Length: 166
Image 1 (tube, rainbow, N blue to C red):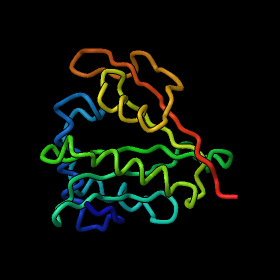
Image 2: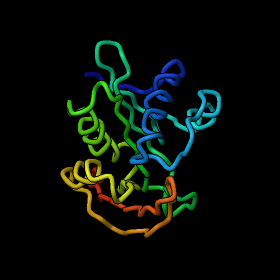
Image 3: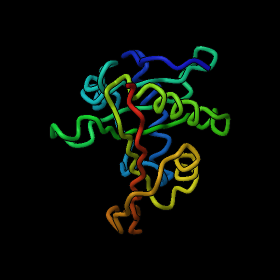
Image 4: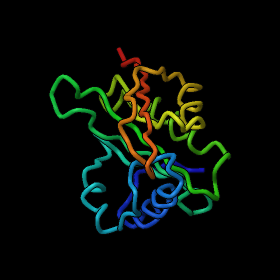
């Protein structure tokens, strides 16, 4: 597996992986699939040196991706980023999400980040387990903030402080 910066030609695969999670109601608050065209502005918000978007490649195929996102657009929060990770169904349970998150933890200080935050549905136990295994702690709970198919869902906030280089 190789982790690299995403390029625009990766966007269809990124969207396909994302859209596969929509009907599961486990990962995203989107209720309908998104189009590649609608994700172009989102893609353009990611820059390799600030808030990168990475893909994990296996045999020249995008198997998963991780994005960094500005947490809150105020100066004091510049060192904090929200991270999201998605893996193609065909490549799950092979450690791809773990490797992407480990790389994010390792490289975040070089991006000027000291804190990573994840927003995960409380019923998404596999994701919560992975983040916890990698040193994230549960920092908060937003009860019943999402409604998925008539079911109110909680959002768990997880976070991890990172050591900046001296």
